[in-house]
Image (cartoon, rainbow, N blue to C red; front, side):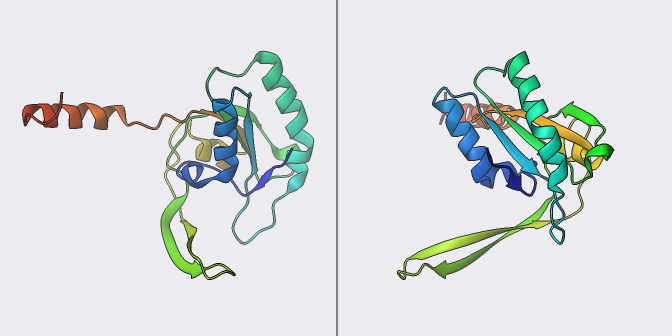
Length: 168
């Protein structure tokens, strides 16, 4: 079991190898949990919280049963264990992403690749979001799935295309 250094909250989950591995596990029929320890970019994470809280939390989650066809995304707050307020079941919010920069570079063999860097900023703290829970000192547990279709966007686009004789 490995715990990611840095949160996987909101938009960051789209870019996360940690969450991607957990979703892949679900696609393979394996109950999966992505684990991350929140930290500020300039700080080292306080691993004591994850060390103390992780196994008891996982035991409770597996005892109660994981929801079908989703992985759980767990984020531990960057606090000493005694300051953690509990566990909240959360929803994916926007997170702390202010922007993304793409830096082209080359690997040791001269092949091109691109390095993505997420710029963090201040964000709103929507109720039930993982960023809100972690900021308030809670461990967040968010059920995630591979389905990312915007239902509102799908409905609007379907209607527009149908009106123009393009879609069904």
